[in-house]
Length: 201
Length: 172
Image 1: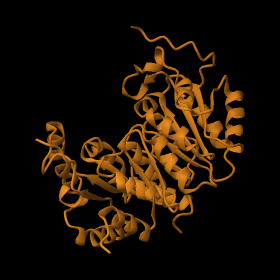
Image 2: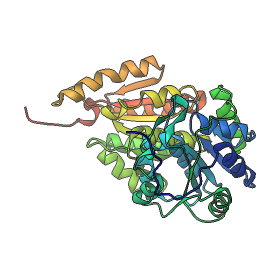
Image 3: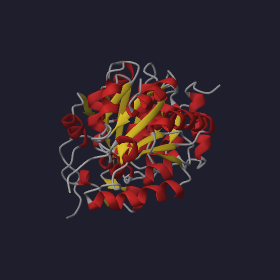
Image 4: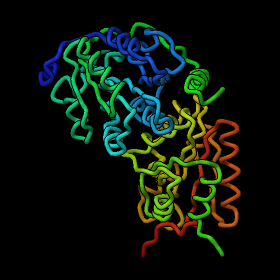
């Protein structure tokens, strides 16, 4: 079966780094950002280092749970999970947990290129019939949207940063690889993040 | 008044400010879960998978809140990658409570097999773990181990033996 992009979301195919750059540019309140492994991580890194960014180095699928944990620990801070479609598919149950707990300060952004780009661009299920925003809605999340284009993405991000969530924003992206490469020093990443969140002095 | 194992454990969590409790349920853990649900100082909820719970507790720790994952032996069997690629290298004191199935009267061969993988995985990753068999040692082990985990930024696992909890009983 050849991959044909699911035609359900009638949206523009955008670029991950461009969207990540636009997302980071909208952050004004030391929002925490947790990025999943691989390209999602690399583009967050390339969009500019922030002490409130956390970069995973493994544990594929756990960006949303980690972000949920931060959101529960710091309910006054807005927390954003950045995930790819392959990672999200690996931990779909997390969407049900998010829907059940309904943390107002949590935002999930899914960058969907319908492929495991980094391992050789093998198609994921979203290349065929699976719609991740619809799955999140089915899990019980109320605010789930596909971004129609870059301007719409910015509007959705602004709404998610300002209003009560949890939110899920999905964006169709191309299959360009990530722009940068994160440092690979886990203890340092964790320590900087905790200082960025004000947990360590 | 003699206290039950789950009351001692709950008190040790509370005394050490471990207030975020995540779990994938187990019959033996039921009284612990029920007791914590009745205490408003705790936040407790179920997750779909154990590794999801580990991720949540990692995030909570980095955000300044201590947490624990409750599970059974087979649940621990799903955790090797999350422990090896997140908890251990990032030095996060995730606390794990594992209700031990697969030994001392197990009726399910699958449980017995996965039980044999548990301690080798913990040992391979260098994770401190204690198998708790006695009520009189429980409070000391849990209290001291939480303090050590937090101070050294290392995870810790408490394996609850059927000798402590009674385990899951069946008739052969």
